[in-house]
Length: 162
Image (cartoon, rainbow, N blue to C red; front, side):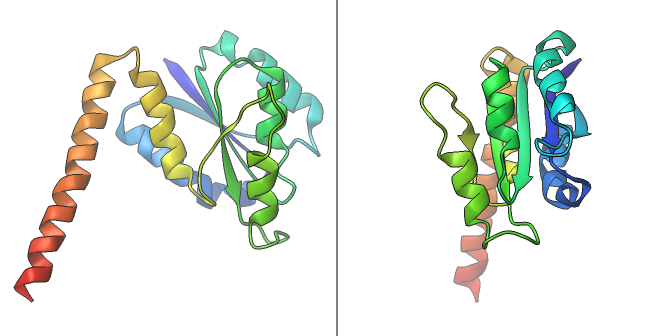
């Protein structure tokens, strides 16, 4: 069942957004991926935001570079949680324009924002939101975090053996 919508402003954003797609697949969360430009396809953007809940989507991950209006505009239309992924694009000011465009939302229109190019964390955050009502998914996330802990412990052992 479709649970997460992953949208991005252009096809050039896909290499960054692929990390969100991959982690959601790892957690066995059904998602859809669309190119939805706030500036070039505003009607599609409005329709996507208006129809997302009807399609079963519970969380939207929106990646955008440059002026990065997509996450905020989607959040202004839907009541679903929106996670913004600022993307360092070719026309970006070292990514700061994207970060600030997504992060500095006005009161009443929140967008959860992850690090520059941080779509993997956006996927994990979406999974954690969904896990609040899904014990099986919650266990998968606990296992994932335990695996992260084990990698650090293993790396520390390797370091001390050198």
